[in-house]
Image: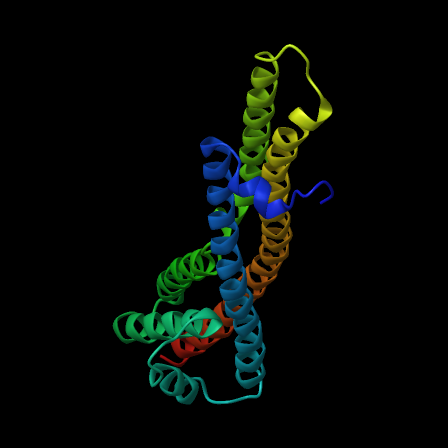
Length: 227
């Protein structure tokens, strides 16, 4: 900046309230960027895992063999978790009941619970990003209003006011708004992007649940007819 002032100087000489606002916004920005990076990796991995599993599922592999492969994994998430929950419940109920309706009702219930858990896992940190995106500009605006208010209060104590006297105070106040926007804009963009990905994955999961339920229902009906 001209006149010997720099952004760092303005921040260091800002009032305590404005400095606290800036510190809060910077902390929120750092936290949101960490969550953005983590969610980007997690959702990208979820999309890739869904594609790979569905390719294997529809390749004609034996469902019992696929279940054993999935169960052997230490961590099972996403569409694999839905498959595991559904097949496990189907096998358990099929041993005790030959009524296809009762077996499928329990199987679909297990997969619906699994679907809810997986969607909840996918939405991790999204509420925080939404909060940062919505409140950061207002927090920055509060710092700006406070800084400008102090500048005009200081002007009231002198007989002759000049632009040089009020400019630094106004400039340091406006930095709070700039930092608020710096924190909010990436958070809003990331939230919208991730929300769209979660919706796509939720739709893919729900479609798989329906298709898998149809396959199991045909097996239950065929088993009932044979008996």
